[in-house]
Length: 106
Image (cartoon, rainbow, N blue to C red):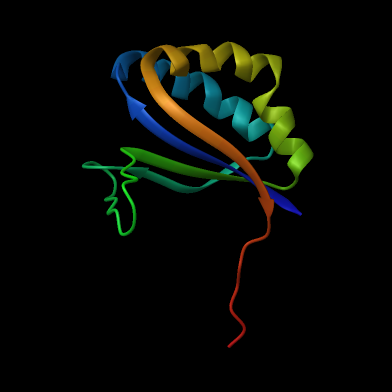
């Protein structure tokens, strides 16, 4: 079953965040992750709050083939080293969800 990392990120220091992105992407690729959603308000996409008070600045969904691969990515020494730059440059929330892509039978 697939697993999905979901991130909500508000960037405080773009330059430092960019260094995180550059370092994290190859690690993500090595662990079989792929972006399903990568939205950046005001640049690459829009986010509209439809219910509640949730208004993320940036929102990402990354798919992994399995729960173990997602955890292997997140807790890898290489990613934990690079994620320090994200922690220093942004405010973020993240969850790991196991599930499957939903398709409607028509």
